[in-house]
Amino acid sequence: MDINTKGVLIVISGPSGAGKGTICKALLEKDKNLHISVSATTRSPRAGEVDGVNYHFMTKEEFKDRIEKDDFLEFAEVYGNFYGTPKSGVQELLDKGYNVILEIDIQGALKVKEKVDDGVFIFILPPSMEELKARIINRGSETEASLMTRFKSAYQEINYVSKYNYAVVNDTVEEAVRKIEGILLAETCRVDRIKEHILDSKEGLIHEQLYD
Image 1 (cartoon, rainbow, N blue to C red):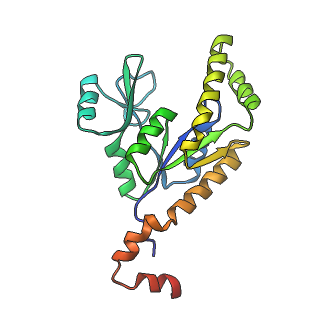
Image 2: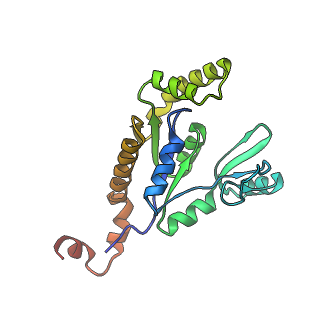
Image 3: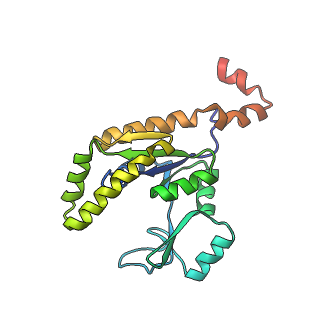
């Protein structure tokens, strides 16, 4: 009998270049019970972007109305546009038993942590700062000035690792994915996640689990 009826919220953060996006994509390809939260934004759709797939596109009035209704786990204004994680969409998936990934920045993750007691917060680390610098350079999209800005920011962001439940070093995507899968498996077996199902059972569930 499966007593894990509610999904687990997994929040993944880390410095630019640590490989968060690649890891999340690999996790989603392997686990069909895993969904990624679609963020909301007030910016206009770019070519090829689909509403509800890339983002939930909203007007500023609609977004602000959602803020007033406390329908965001976290939100921020960036260059005149709002971005946020809709609470209702995440909760709907969790209630259906799906595990949900939020790939968000550190400030957003800390806001989610204030609202979600049982979230799993994972910080992705590079193998070394030199490797992080090499990965950013290999993107080929950074000027010397922007490279130094990103690298300095990464040093500062790593200081937040103590705010997270787990730290995963991204030596290889395959190994990082394996570690996160292990974390997720352990989290779904935690007593504080399943105790209400055990205690509420009137069918001798504990006896069945131990001796059946």
